[in-house]
Image (cartoon, rainbow, N blue to C red; front, top):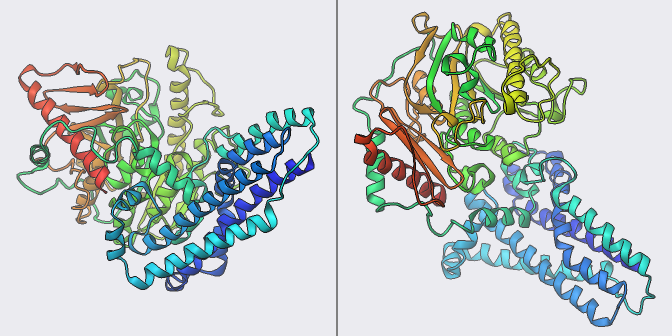
Length: 619
């Protein structure tokens, strides 16, 4: 029976080694680029360390068939079963080597990993051959043969022992059957943590080349195929002729005059965005919420501009991240942040500010692995990225990570050492379940959302402490604070998920850089969180044309509208009313629409969703 266990673990180890062998070939293939980017030896070496968790997960998937073969061999071991295992493994070696060679070829052009989009292009192999340099094509073909031949030779020579005529041991077979799948399952999901492993686990560097090398090829390709298989070839949200939809969206964004109301005293303020996890507008008294939940936020309103009609386009944190940083609206089915080949085409607020000589930083007390946020943040090129592992070990933490008061307090001190002007984002987490914040829970109402509103009370308290400390810092008077939610949350009002109210979120511009006549005001312009990019850059007189889904909320000529999405449809908001719908349910869900504008609302909302999804597919 030792042969069975030995064979299993030797094959598992083989896959880890083979993945790293192809990774080494990838690195050597791009050695000139590594030299140009002046990447150190130890940074390159980090690729092989940070790739291990995702490699192990992929190896566990690859070992599914060998496990079944070994399971049979533990009770019945004819020679032909060895052949089955060998043929399967040789096929997988060839397949993986093919993905590795393909990735080497596309990185120079697209700076991304192999994806479903690339596979789709391979329907015309002659076009690929004609578009590549002949020498590169044959070099990659040679590398494919070398990787495949080397992998098969090493596997057969040192890692696969033939298993024949074993003595039966039913107790061992039962144990092997029960225990091994459990261990494989844990390996596949990356452990017992709440969020299964994804590509973010392997992101570690500010150099895109190293992150691409670190992420397992097949794991990434699987995610890409899974996300696109249902909707890649055609847009499932086509409601009208393309030219009609494009014309409607253009009319929505057209402005009579490209101007802005200047609300700042300086063109180059420090900028701090505090992104609030799961804050609904119902937490804010002046946005329709009940008193007493967020008193500190209400005090901040006296020194800032409260936006009274802002909506989240999505319902997940990674969607909010792409909206705020990339100015890109959320859409049904998938999220752009989990697909590097797509989000690499988005503009970036952080990169726009870096061109204006801003230093950049991102703080989060939890794990950035969720929704591939880590990969997206790394791509955005922040100078400093801090998640749970990067904060001091003595900071108190709960199940999800470090509590908000401690991350906010850390940032207040840490920004003092940053070169100004700086752009910093802090993403809170305490208003996400399991609500284990180190704070009393005095609010006894709220029914099913009692824990959530008490968590919001805690985060609000943390905001108060943060600003009390920040006011003593040298950088405070030169800083614009933008406090905005990543998305909304079901509230104690229990709005219908398709309703306008369900998607409404708070947004506050605050700070001494705001001109006095605007402090303590309420701004009623209808908009989304993806409007932050253009709104902010317009105040700084920085071009924002690339953020074409983002509008300037301080331009009086800009139309009032907002968009939101759900898993299978979307919604559209205008001053005269709104509607939302679910594609899988034939009837539209209307909520307080103006009868006169009903047809216009539906046409505009459909056109907007159609165009957002079209651009997502085409990027």
